[in-house]
Each structure stands twice: as C-alpha cells, then as structure tokens.
Length: 173
Image 1 (tube, rainbow, N blue to C red):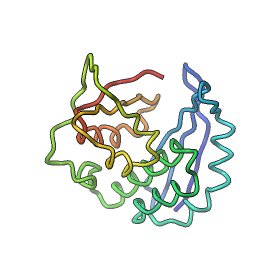
Image 2: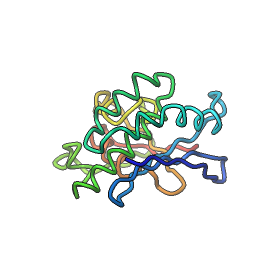
Image 3: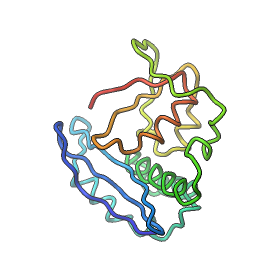
C-alpha cells in the first residue's frame, strides 16, 4: 500500500492530509493540528514520517488491525491514528466496492441526524484514536462532534459513525 501525506492550507491555518493508495484507488484522512493543544503541522508530519513504514507494510484488508497497531505505537497521537484508520477504511471500501456504512454494519440504523442546540455530551471522534475506538464509545446519550474538513475529508466515515450516536453536531475549528 502506498502512503502519502501533504500539507494543505485553509482559512484557519494548516492541516495534514494522509492518503493511502492501492490499485489506483485512494483513501483519505486529515489532521488539523490544534495550537491550543500544543500541536503543529511539523510535529504531525514528523510522527507520520517516523512510523510510515508500519502503514506501508499493511494491506488494505488489515484496516482494523492497522488501527489497533497504530494506537499501540502512537498512544499520544490519536488524531493521526484516526486519520490513517479512516483513510484505510475508505480505501478498503473502494477496493471492495462496498459502502462504509455497510462495512461498519450501520446500514439498517437511522440516517445521520444533525442535532441543533444539543445540550448533552459530545465525543470528538478524532480524539478516540480510531474508527473502531469511536464505535466502542458509542451511546445514544452522546452526540458525535463532527468538524468539517476543508475538502470534506473523512466526511463519509464520520457521518457513518454518527449513526451509532444520538446524532451529530457540527463543530467549528
């Protein structure tokens, strides 16, 4: 599997896009470093470069175990592991010609519901460390906090995950 990453800019700053490619199909993930949490694109890209070999050696069919492996070796970088696991899931869905909702077994669940004026607790998926970690945190008492990425990176993954929650709230960067 080929693994690429690059720096993109948007009105609020910069973010890192990760791409996994196999047989001409591409899965995409994104990480927006949050300065208030001490993150910046240089550290994100440095961590990705240091551990890229783990991703490149994986097969798209191993997207679930890849997520768990990355979480073990990068416990302090949940947004990086989430972005890579989301990219791997998207790539697998394209290679298998199967929707992400079907892979996550949520086709029969309610459609994603945007919650306006939600007063309850929210979960920021990217901070869980992976797609399956987000699933294991799901609850109808929680809303999934979704932040829109500039080029809609990870949108299908995040909306599919939101079906396991009370709904989703759009959050700002």
